[in-house]
View 1: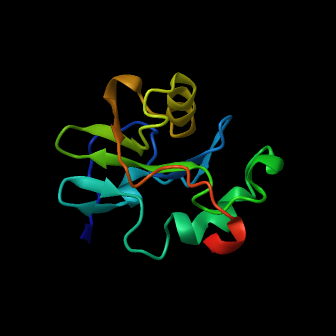
View 2 (view 1 turned 30 degrees about the vertical axis):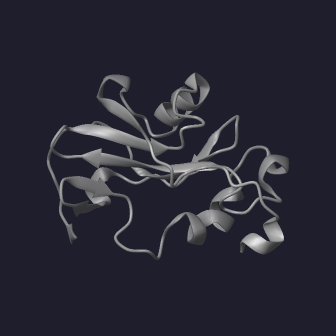
View 3 (view 1 turned 180 degrees about the vertical axis):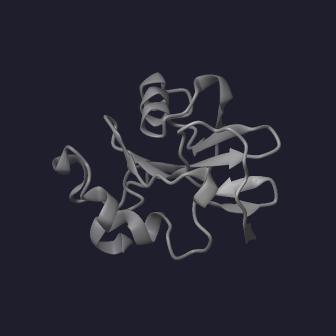
Length: 139
């Protein structure tokens, strides 16, 4: 992986990692220009130091409804990533199959990352799912 600045016009859209509370998207947002190119995909983080596990405590504090998130672990909500594909020039939203077709979720993630619906693909990934667990054991 290498850091690369690409001059493709992506507007004011962002990439990052996110969680879906059922009513809002919370997460990180960075410009694709600040991401890391891995083959043809621009990732939001260069290594494993900033991921869903490491960012959860900081990001959950930004949720509007703290009751929805205060006792959850990082796997306790639906989660995923927004990436940018330099070959197709489209943003890719990775998520679980449970919310893949949820219109409220799709609108929320498009709004949060300022994405253009015509240049955004949704991709179901079994890695991202809501894990119903005891939060004390999940950390």
